[in-house]
Image (cartoon, rainbow, N blue to C red):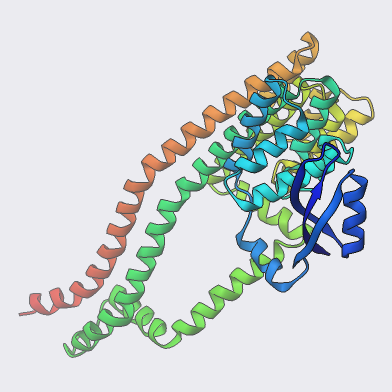
Length: 403
């Protein structure tokens, strides 16, 4: 597969320029001619299968904020009765990054060739998720694309804010723990050995804490490389395990069991489930399809399995609330709220209330954890330094008290 840049004349006699993916130049020209374009120039620009382009994908991607901005702009354009083709052309010309421009132009090309907007966007899964594409498809069917893109922009903003808040809350403690470990290693490998020589010269039986600290120092000095290799191997093993389905399930369940952090993750996933279902149901997507999409985009293997099982039960005719009740991962409060929504015929609104509740819970839990992190870290550092000083000072104190 290669990328070709072209210049062509459209049916209105206007000159157009852009890029197109094709196996060879003949197929590229044929695709352009099917779009009612007269090709005046076409050149190969890059091979999408090359090592260089593959490596660039690792570093070049469309950011969440770019998709949010595009969704907001699409809302305004559709409210102004601008056509989909014209809207994508305008957004492509004003995009912040060349990669976003390329994707939007490709979508516009497919729309001009006769594709539906949702089908054209589905060709770019790295930009538009399954959830996003299905929401757009529902907007096309209902004729409410402006409302759909407004929903999507709000949803993406909420989801990004929750995820980033939880992630940022973990950066500070991770940095403190890493710094503490580095300082302790330096102390054990550089400072304690010199102190050990001095303490052993006192000709006294060293206390147990002192012998333990000296022993740890000895093993760190002689086997630090082995320890690093073991840690790296353990990390690589966990990563490899995470690539398999069983491994992902195991790591996901372990993550949910971590005190404090596991509860935050659970609330994030519950908020995401409620938010997804609410947004899709209010947009007219059928409950079964909404459950299937939610399972695919929730981002956790445990809750993905729950949504898959619930979708099967609903497909068999079971009410949503009863299907959810079978799974301990779903709190009883959510089940009770959804049951009320089923009885009143307003499940979408109820789920929106649930999503708002769990967003507030996530905010409160993260704020509480951030407030507790600093004193916990200070106490931990004080204990570590205290143990080290005690181990060093005890034999000196014993010698001094013997005189």
